[in-house]
Image (cartoon, rainbow, N blue to C red; front, side, top):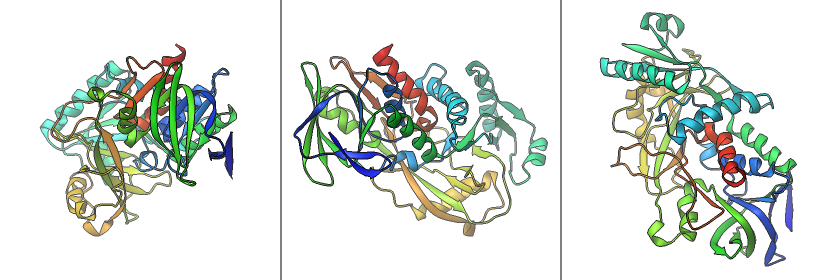
Length: 391
């Protein structure tokens, strides 16, 4: 049995028994991706799904510390999982989640070019978008000045009308409601300390952060969607020669403390060559409030959430290239988020999502390096993982 905490049906493991009844699936990690997977698996009447979260609430880490942007899917190689799942996930958000009342807005986005090299980049993205089936438009600079007078684009503008913004918490509430209505069980305050293969499935050891006691769960299948800690969960089970390591990329966000000028869409610079960041961009809250970020700062800890105020001047230089009206006093450090990456700062190659059933471990599906566009892709990832199990 799971014992209710009395809030929104959220539960934690009872310590009254050492072994719990079998589940068909255990999903480890209740961020937006884990919630989407659990919600999708719970739709199958034959499944009995438990969602295990180490924090006392859902979505307290990467899912609630990001730009809350709905990405169009422009930046990734055509045959990559990132492109496929971002585009599919975007459509699911607009068609399914929006109709269900999830807070979002299709505000659109510009990528602005200041040099000939940057102009060539956005032109390449424009032609690539045709292959991807994503709607984009090249806008003349003079027309851009009329549409967004506060934005400076020296050489060119690529418009992405299907980009948008979303409330991550509203989306997570929606996914959790689906999961709950399909009799899924959520165990919060439960840290997975052990994971081993048995003759007919897996055994999970989970330690309660509230009672400091350990419980044992037997399951047929396990989904590792632990986000920043997915490498550690994977390494509990897989042999040492298949161990993986996450690198942590911190992104700082800054509030715009001025109410003027107004901007009506997301504004992105052209990404710097050889970096793993889309650049410090202008994004909007659903209330229209402007904020900037994230920048990119490599850190050693997945809990280093204190905003790095010392990065403000560097961020200001980037922002002033496309938003010249801003001054230092307009920027206020707000919050930071951490992205998990499978390759470190010295490796500039593209890293796709890793979503796979591990060889030799039937029923164990690993999700590694799930960073941006994970929020946009979340519902599509849920369907992708469900197909691994159910075809």
